[in-house]
Image 1 (tube, rainbow, N blue to C red):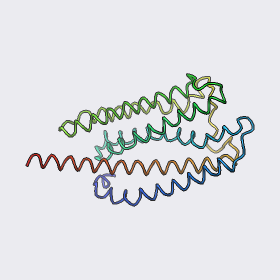
Image 2 (image 1 turned 30 degrees about the horizontal axis):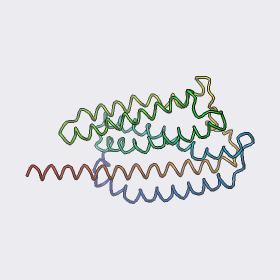
Image 3 (image 1 turned 120 degrees about the vertical axis):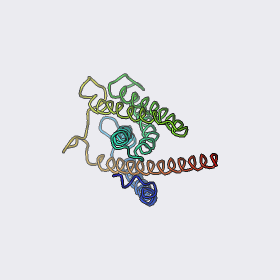
Image 4 (image 1 turned 135 degrees about the horizontal axis):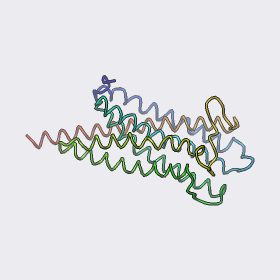
Length: 243
């Protein structure tokens, strides 16, 4: 794993992989949304409002996956001191927060005709809102750690990594909230080995989820490359200032 700690080696992999993930993801999302919006039938109960699921479900998945990425990278940073782990965690935060906010927005739009209200303090909705606040807190800590690192201080980076690990507790709470508490939100439609979703909806949804996931991966790689470039520029400026 430490073999990829060399920024040059990492960049040699990330540069060709980024456009490959991005282009493949865009194509899959376009096909999935086309099939879901124009080919799949309307739902028997929800009618055409069900079509928002092709955005809402991938956004919910990536909102949770983003924080899972932060937690894994934070663990690697704390235990193995991997130099790129903190950068990977920081790179995951902003796209994860975006998809979390998108999940909340599309969920509210879906809830209005389905539940008759834009928002309820349901276990699933509330825990997802908590996740958005966790993202905002993590990004503030990550920005502070970057400024401290530029000044030669490293303590804040450990605080951000610990926060990333502790915040992961909320991810299983989101996942199990519809089981643990009475909820307006429907239970999981896809579980291990079976699905309650009709294939006419499932195939476009699967393509949208995979496509958005590939785009998510491309964005993380792009942000990691940008953060590495910023670090190199800052180091060069410090050397010039000291000369």
